[in-house]
Amino acid sequence: AQTWLLPGGLRLAAAASRSKLCRRLHSEQVPEKERTLWKRLYEEDYERRKKLANFLDGLAQIIASRRNNPDAAHDHHESANKDQNYFNFQTRDSDSIKLTKELSFEWIRNMMARANANDNIVSASAFRKILNLAKPILQQSPNITLIRQDVDVVVVGDLHGSLSDLIRVLDMAGPPSASNIYVFNGDFVDRGDKGCEVLVALLALKVLFPEQVVLNRGNHEDPAINRAYGFFDEVMAKYKDPALYEEITEIFSVLPLCAVIEERAFIVHAGPPCTEGATIFHIGAIGRAALRTTAHSLWNSHADPAQEAAAAAPNANSTAMAAAEKVAGRLQ
Image 1 (cartoon, rainbow, N blue to C red):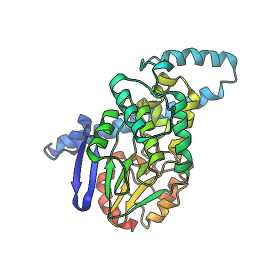
Image 2: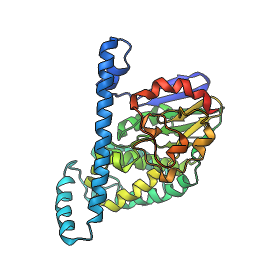
Image 3: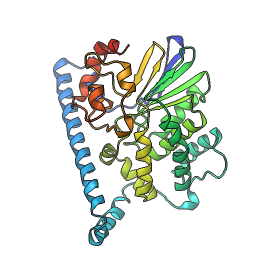
Image 4: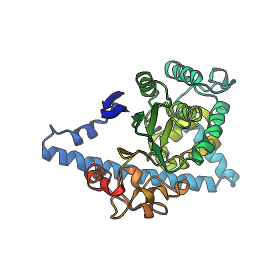
Protein backbone atom coordinates (compact mmCIF):
# COMPACT_ATOMS: atom_id res chain seq x y z
CA ALA A 1 0.00 0.00 0.00
CA GLN A 2 1.05 3.60 -0.53
CA THR A 3 0.06 6.83 1.20
CA TRP A 4 -0.04 10.28 -0.35
CA LEU A 5 -0.22 13.50 1.69
CA LEU A 6 -2.38 16.13 0.03
CA PRO A 7 -2.74 19.80 0.96
CA GLY A 8 -4.80 20.46 4.07
CA GLY A 9 -4.02 17.13 5.72
CA LEU A 10 -5.99 14.92 3.31
CA ARG A 11 -4.17 11.63 3.03
CA LEU A 12 -4.90 9.04 0.39
CA ALA A 13 -3.98 5.42 1.04
CA ALA A 14 -4.60 2.67 -1.49
CA ALA A 15 -3.43 -0.77 -2.43
CA ALA A 16 -0.49 -0.38 -4.77
CA SER A 17 -0.98 -3.54 -6.81
CA ARG A 18 -2.70 -3.22 -10.20
CA SER A 19 -3.11 -5.67 -13.03
CA LYS A 20 -0.79 -5.37 -16.02
CA LEU A 21 -3.79 -4.64 -18.20
CA CYS A 22 -4.83 -1.62 -16.11
CA ARG A 23 -1.27 -0.34 -15.90
CA ARG A 24 -0.87 -0.46 -19.66
CA LEU A 25 -4.29 1.08 -20.20
CA HIS A 26 -3.53 4.18 -18.13
CA SER A 27 0.20 4.56 -18.80
CA GLU A 28 1.14 7.76 -20.62
CA GLN A 29 4.30 6.05 -21.91
CA VAL A 30 2.32 3.52 -23.95
CA PRO A 31 1.77 4.49 -27.63
CA GLU A 32 -1.79 5.47 -28.51
CA LYS A 33 -2.38 2.44 -30.78
CA GLU A 34 -1.24 0.05 -28.09
CA ARG A 35 -3.32 1.84 -25.45
CA THR A 36 -6.37 1.50 -27.72
CA LEU A 37 -5.75 -2.24 -27.89
CA TRP A 38 -5.43 -2.55 -24.12
CA LYS A 39 -8.61 -0.54 -23.71
CA ARG A 40 -10.51 -2.90 -25.99
CA LEU A 41 -9.18 -5.92 -24.07
CA TYR A 42 -10.17 -4.27 -20.79
CA GLU A 43 -13.73 -3.64 -21.99
CA GLU A 44 -14.08 -7.17 -23.39
CA ASP A 45 -12.87 -8.65 -20.10
CA TYR A 46 -15.32 -6.47 -18.18
CA GLU A 47 -18.26 -7.59 -20.34
CA ARG A 48 -17.32 -11.27 -19.99
CA ARG A 49 -17.06 -11.04 -16.22
CA LYS A 50 -20.36 -9.18 -15.94
CA LYS A 51 -22.12 -11.85 -18.02
CA LEU A 52 -20.51 -14.58 -15.92
CA ALA A 53 -21.60 -12.87 -12.71
CA ASN A 54 -25.20 -12.60 -13.90
CA PHE A 55 -25.18 -16.22 -15.07
CA LEU A 56 -23.86 -17.50 -11.73
CA ASP A 57 -26.36 -15.37 -9.85
CA GLY A 58 -29.21 -16.86 -11.88
CA LEU A 59 -27.81 -20.36 -11.44
CA ALA A 60 -27.65 -19.88 -7.68
CA GLN A 61 -31.30 -18.82 -7.64
CA ILE A 62 -32.27 -21.97 -9.59
CA ILE A 63 -30.35 -24.14 -7.14
CA ALA A 64 -32.01 -22.44 -4.20
CA SER A 65 -35.46 -23.01 -5.71
CA ARG A 66 -34.76 -26.75 -6.07
CA ARG A 67 -33.63 -27.33 -2.51
CA ASN A 68 -37.11 -28.56 -1.59
CA ASN A 69 -36.55 -31.49 -3.97
CA PRO A 70 -34.62 -34.15 -1.98
CA ASP A 71 -32.87 -35.61 -5.05
CA ALA A 72 -31.77 -32.18 -6.31
CA ALA A 73 -30.68 -31.15 -2.82
CA HIS A 74 -28.55 -34.30 -2.50
CA ASP A 75 -26.82 -33.61 -5.82
CA HIS A 76 -26.22 -29.97 -4.80
CA HIS A 77 -24.72 -31.06 -1.46
CA GLU A 78 -22.27 -33.43 -3.17
CA SER A 79 -21.19 -30.68 -5.59
CA ALA A 80 -20.83 -28.08 -2.82
CA ASN A 81 -18.54 -30.33 -0.79
CA LYS A 82 -16.18 -30.58 -3.76
CA ASP A 83 -16.24 -26.83 -4.43
CA GLN A 84 -15.47 -25.93 -0.82
CA ASN A 85 -12.07 -27.62 -1.06
CA TYR A 86 -10.97 -25.01 -3.61
CA PHE A 87 -9.38 -22.71 -1.04
CA ASN A 88 -8.21 -25.56 1.24
CA PHE A 89 -8.36 -23.52 4.46
CA GLN A 90 -7.95 -24.89 7.98
CA THR A 91 -11.39 -24.66 9.55
CA ARG A 92 -10.99 -26.46 12.90
CA ASP A 93 -12.86 -24.57 15.58
CA SER A 94 -9.98 -24.99 18.05
CA ASP A 95 -7.75 -22.90 15.75
CA SER A 96 -10.26 -20.17 15.00
CA ILE A 97 -10.07 -16.66 16.41
CA LYS A 98 -12.79 -16.12 18.98
CA LEU A 99 -14.34 -13.02 20.52
CA THR A 100 -14.82 -13.93 24.17
CA LYS A 101 -14.49 -10.44 25.62
CA GLU A 102 -15.72 -7.01 24.64
CA LEU A 103 -14.66 -5.88 21.17
CA SER A 104 -11.53 -3.71 21.24
CA PHE A 105 -8.96 -2.22 18.88
CA GLU A 106 -6.39 -4.58 20.41
CA TRP A 107 -8.57 -7.56 19.44
CA ILE A 108 -8.77 -6.28 15.84
CA ARG A 109 -4.99 -5.89 15.60
CA ASN A 110 -4.35 -9.31 17.15
CA MET A 111 -6.93 -10.93 14.87
CA MET A 112 -5.34 -9.43 11.77
CA ALA A 113 -1.84 -10.44 12.88
CA ARG A 114 -2.86 -14.06 13.55
CA ALA A 115 -4.86 -14.37 10.35
CA ASN A 116 -2.09 -12.83 8.26
CA ALA A 117 0.72 -14.89 9.76
CA ASN A 118 -0.93 -18.26 10.40
CA ASP A 119 -4.05 -18.36 8.20
CA ASN A 120 -6.28 -18.61 11.27
CA ILE A 121 -9.89 -17.75 10.53
CA VAL A 122 -12.34 -15.85 12.71
CA SER A 123 -14.82 -18.19 14.36
CA ALA A 124 -18.32 -18.23 12.88
CA SER A 125 -19.79 -17.05 16.17
CA ALA A 126 -17.39 -14.07 16.33
CA PHE A 127 -18.09 -13.26 12.68
CA ARG A 128 -21.84 -13.26 13.32
CA LYS A 129 -21.49 -11.18 16.46
CA ILE A 130 -19.63 -8.46 14.57
CA LEU A 131 -22.14 -8.60 11.70
CA ASN A 132 -24.98 -8.12 14.17
CA LEU A 133 -23.21 -5.25 15.92
CA ALA A 134 -22.41 -3.44 12.66
CA LYS A 135 -25.73 -3.90 10.87
CA PRO A 136 -27.87 -1.41 12.85
CA ILE A 137 -25.10 1.19 12.68
CA LEU A 138 -24.92 0.88 8.89
CA GLN A 139 -28.71 0.81 8.51
CA GLN A 140 -28.95 4.14 10.30
CA SER A 141 -26.18 5.70 8.19
CA PRO A 142 -27.21 8.00 5.32
CA ASN A 143 -26.27 7.33 1.70
CA ILE A 144 -23.83 10.24 1.91
CA THR A 145 -21.49 10.65 4.87
CA LEU A 146 -20.52 14.25 5.61
CA ILE A 147 -17.00 14.82 6.94
CA ARG A 148 -15.61 18.01 8.42
CA GLN A 149 -12.83 19.84 6.63
CA ASP A 150 -10.63 20.44 9.69
CA VAL A 151 -9.58 16.79 10.17
CA ASP A 152 -7.20 14.36 8.50
CA VAL A 153 -9.00 11.97 6.15
CA VAL A 154 -7.44 8.67 5.06
CA VAL A 155 -9.13 7.36 1.92
CA VAL A 156 -8.38 3.66 1.33
CA GLY A 157 -8.97 2.19 -2.11
CA ASP A 158 -9.75 -1.39 -3.16
CA LEU A 159 -8.41 -3.84 -0.58
CA HIS A 160 -9.76 -6.93 -2.37
CA GLY A 161 -9.07 -9.36 0.45
CA SER A 162 -5.52 -8.14 1.07
CA LEU A 163 -5.20 -8.19 4.85
CA SER A 164 -1.52 -7.26 4.70
CA ASP A 165 -2.43 -4.01 2.90
CA LEU A 166 -4.98 -3.15 5.58
CA ILE A 167 -2.44 -3.80 8.32
CA ARG A 168 0.11 -1.62 6.51
CA VAL A 169 -2.36 1.26 6.06
CA LEU A 170 -3.29 1.26 9.76
CA ASP A 171 0.40 1.14 10.72
CA MET A 172 1.17 4.13 8.50
CA ALA A 173 -1.85 6.31 9.24
CA GLY A 174 -2.58 5.33 12.84
CA PRO A 175 -5.85 4.31 14.48
CA PRO A 176 -9.13 6.12 13.77
CA SER A 177 -9.85 9.09 16.00
CA ALA A 178 -11.82 12.33 16.08
CA SER A 179 -9.02 13.99 14.10
CA ASN A 180 -8.10 10.98 11.92
CA ILE A 181 -11.06 9.82 9.81
CA TYR A 182 -10.95 6.71 7.60
CA VAL A 183 -12.99 6.24 4.41
CA PHE A 184 -12.76 2.69 3.06
CA ASN A 185 -13.97 3.19 -0.49
CA GLY A 186 -15.46 -0.17 -1.45
CA ASP A 187 -14.26 -3.47 -2.95
CA PHE A 188 -13.27 -4.99 0.38
CA VAL A 189 -13.50 -8.61 -0.85
CA ASP A 190 -12.91 -10.88 -3.89
CA ARG A 191 -9.63 -11.74 -5.63
CA GLY A 192 -7.60 -11.97 -2.39
CA ASP A 193 -7.87 -14.94 -0.02
CA LYS A 194 -8.45 -12.91 3.18
CA GLY A 195 -11.72 -11.24 2.27
CA CYS A 196 -13.47 -12.61 5.36
CA GLU A 197 -10.82 -11.26 7.70
CA VAL A 198 -10.68 -7.89 5.93
CA LEU A 199 -14.47 -7.59 6.21
CA VAL A 200 -14.47 -8.56 9.89
CA ALA A 201 -11.75 -6.00 10.63
CA LEU A 202 -13.55 -3.19 8.78
CA LEU A 203 -16.91 -3.92 10.40
CA ALA A 204 -15.28 -4.16 13.83
CA LEU A 205 -13.61 -0.79 13.24
CA LYS A 206 -17.01 0.63 12.29
CA VAL A 207 -18.51 -0.69 15.53
CA LEU A 208 -15.70 0.76 17.65
CA PHE A 209 -15.44 4.06 15.74
CA PRO A 210 -18.88 4.67 14.17
CA GLU A 211 -18.21 8.37 13.52
CA GLN A 212 -14.56 7.99 12.52
CA VAL A 213 -14.81 5.06 10.07
CA VAL A 214 -16.80 5.25 6.82
CA LEU A 215 -17.47 2.14 4.71
CA ASN A 216 -18.56 2.96 1.15
CA ARG A 217 -20.02 0.26 -1.07
CA GLY A 218 -18.17 -0.88 -4.19
CA ASN A 219 -19.26 -3.09 -7.07
CA HIS A 220 -17.74 -6.16 -5.37
CA GLU A 221 -20.09 -5.84 -2.41
CA ASP A 222 -22.65 -7.85 -4.38
CA PRO A 223 -23.56 -11.57 -4.41
CA ALA A 224 -23.41 -11.97 -8.19
CA ILE A 225 -19.93 -10.45 -8.39
CA ASN A 226 -18.79 -12.54 -5.40
CA ARG A 227 -19.64 -15.74 -7.27
CA ALA A 228 -17.53 -14.69 -10.24
CA TYR A 229 -14.52 -13.31 -8.34
CA GLY A 230 -14.11 -15.71 -5.42
CA PHE A 231 -15.55 -14.33 -2.17
CA PHE A 232 -18.52 -16.72 -2.16
CA ASP A 233 -16.11 -19.67 -2.57
CA GLU A 234 -13.93 -18.28 0.22
CA VAL A 235 -16.84 -18.10 2.67
CA MET A 236 -17.97 -21.63 1.75
CA ALA A 237 -14.45 -23.02 2.09
CA LYS A 238 -13.85 -21.42 5.48
CA TYR A 239 -17.29 -21.83 7.06
CA LYS A 240 -19.38 -24.18 4.86
CA ASP A 241 -22.35 -22.07 5.92
CA PRO A 242 -24.61 -20.54 3.23
CA ALA A 243 -26.63 -18.78 5.93
CA LEU A 244 -23.55 -16.86 7.05
CA TYR A 245 -22.96 -15.69 3.49
CA GLU A 246 -26.57 -14.48 3.29
CA GLU A 247 -26.00 -12.44 6.45
CA ILE A 248 -22.90 -10.91 4.86
CA THR A 249 -24.87 -9.92 1.74
CA GLU A 250 -27.41 -8.18 3.99
CA ILE A 251 -24.55 -6.08 5.33
CA PHE A 252 -23.46 -5.25 1.78
CA SER A 253 -26.96 -3.99 0.95
CA VAL A 254 -26.94 -1.37 3.71
CA LEU A 255 -23.46 0.08 3.09
CA PRO A 256 -23.42 3.86 2.37
CA LEU A 257 -22.67 4.99 -1.17
CA CYS A 258 -20.30 7.95 -0.85
CA ALA A 259 -18.76 10.59 1.39
CA VAL A 260 -18.28 14.34 1.08
CA ILE A 261 -15.54 16.36 2.80
CA GLU A 262 -17.48 19.60 3.08
CA GLU A 263 -16.94 21.38 -0.26
CA ARG A 264 -13.53 19.90 -0.99
CA ALA A 265 -13.94 16.28 -2.06
CA PHE A 266 -16.57 13.81 -3.24
CA ILE A 267 -15.53 10.22 -2.45
CA VAL A 268 -17.32 7.37 -4.26
CA HIS A 269 -16.15 4.01 -5.51
CA ALA A 270 -16.86 4.77 -9.16
CA GLY A 271 -17.66 8.32 -10.14
CA PRO A 272 -20.36 10.99 -10.24
CA PRO A 273 -23.47 10.50 -12.41
CA CYS A 274 -23.31 12.21 -15.79
CA THR A 275 -27.06 12.79 -16.20
CA GLU A 276 -27.83 16.45 -16.78
CA GLY A 277 -29.31 17.99 -13.65
CA ALA A 278 -28.26 15.22 -11.28
CA THR A 279 -27.11 16.52 -7.91
CA ILE A 280 -25.84 15.19 -4.62
CA PHE A 281 -29.43 15.24 -3.37
CA HIS A 282 -30.44 12.62 -5.95
CA ILE A 283 -27.73 10.30 -4.64
CA GLY A 284 -28.95 10.89 -1.10
CA ALA A 285 -32.44 9.75 -2.09
CA ILE A 286 -31.46 6.37 -3.60
CA GLY A 287 -32.97 3.38 -1.79
CA ARG A 288 -29.70 1.56 -1.35
CA ALA A 289 -31.09 -1.56 0.40
CA ALA A 290 -32.57 -2.77 -2.92
CA LEU A 291 -29.68 -1.55 -5.06
CA ARG A 292 -27.71 -4.06 -7.13
CA THR A 293 -24.17 -3.20 -8.18
CA THR A 294 -23.86 -5.23 -11.39
CA ALA A 295 -25.06 -2.45 -13.69
CA HIS A 296 -24.99 0.97 -12.00
CA SER A 297 -22.44 3.61 -11.17
CA LEU A 298 -20.50 1.53 -8.65
CA TRP A 299 -19.10 -0.17 -11.78
CA ASN A 300 -17.25 3.03 -12.75
CA SER A 301 -20.08 3.93 -15.09
CA HIS A 302 -22.41 6.90 -14.92
CA ALA A 303 -26.09 6.11 -14.66
CA ASP A 304 -29.01 8.39 -13.83
CA PRO A 305 -29.48 8.30 -10.03
CA ALA A 306 -33.23 8.21 -10.63
CA GLN A 307 -32.75 5.03 -12.67
CA GLU A 308 -30.35 3.47 -10.20
CA ALA A 309 -33.08 3.02 -7.62
CA ALA A 310 -34.78 0.51 -9.94
CA ALA A 311 -32.56 -0.72 -12.76
CA ALA A 312 -29.33 0.92 -13.86
CA ALA A 313 -28.44 1.69 -17.44
CA PRO A 314 -25.41 -0.22 -18.84
CA ASN A 315 -22.24 1.75 -19.48
CA ALA A 316 -18.68 0.90 -20.44
CA ASN A 317 -16.45 0.55 -17.40
CA SER A 318 -13.54 2.42 -18.93
CA THR A 319 -15.47 5.64 -19.56
CA ALA A 320 -15.53 6.74 -15.93
CA MET A 321 -12.24 8.60 -15.76
CA ALA A 322 -12.95 10.56 -18.94
CA ALA A 323 -16.42 11.59 -17.82
CA ALA A 324 -15.72 12.30 -14.15
CA GLU A 325 -14.06 15.69 -14.62
CA LYS A 326 -16.85 16.96 -16.87
CA VAL A 327 -19.70 16.04 -14.54
CA ALA A 328 -18.21 16.55 -11.08
CA GLY A 329 -19.23 20.19 -11.01
CA ARG A 330 -22.90 19.33 -11.45
CA LEU A 331 -23.12 17.66 -8.02
CA GLN A 332 -23.00 20.92 -6.10
